Length: 330
Image 1 (cartoon, rainbow, N blue to C red):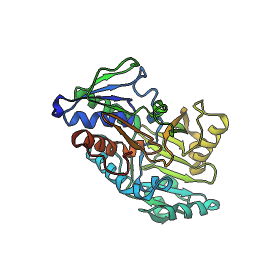
Image 2 (cartoon, rainbow, N blue to C red):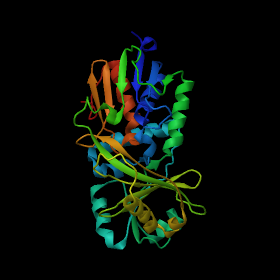
Image 3 (cartoon, rainbow, N blue to C red):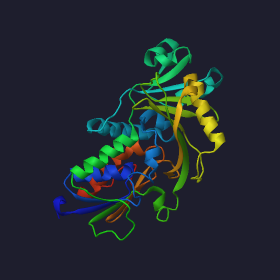
Image 4 (cartoon, rainbow, N blue to C red):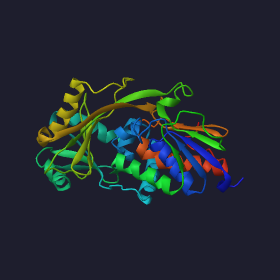
């Protein structure tokens, strides 16, 4: 059977599902996308992501052999029609937390240690804020929600049959790809939730060109510039299955960390405080589980946006050529 006559169901419209549908539709398959939420991305953990495309920084919490795969996935993003900001990543720490910076430096590659003068050139608003930093020039970021919307619009242009608010029986297909995250817990008993908390603020007369990560032994955070003078402030990892709202204590710590990066954040207006859980496997590496024509792509952890294009490539190769080689296949 040729690909033009094969029908593929993709279940879940987070960043993994969107990329699976996009890749396969571009290659000529007939694709249906199913999502249980009534509004696009309403129930997806992807909408809470920092969307930092950071192969070197993210390897600090995973395996170093992930780096070349992540670099290839970043290349796919850059080759795509979606907006990617290739401005690098800046890692900073207060003087009393210099040991954290040194430890991060030892655990990662692809960086340059820079001092106050170079920091100011990269981010003028951080003049005199930090004496040294790590700069990862070959990293990038994107604005997750506009990019997810652009992916959805691209799917509609590619004649993908999109179903929101859907929980019934799906139409028969030649392959089914499940990207539901924690919704697939029953099929993946090792899947665990990792809580992420975030704030979105707006601040006039203030700009950053790239994500800034503040290292701290207890409350590390990252600040990602979004369009329209908005900034996403996120906490890295909290091992918890709590899906409730952000607590006052967590909000104070999160916003206080941003204030320690620059006191200008004290004047920012809070647009959103949200929390959600990321689906994660024991080694924090996403996996592709194959059972004939049933495929599960899950365990994105912090790597959903970073690795979504490459995971879609791998699934496409399996469907077309029955190839299931590499670190992501189980």
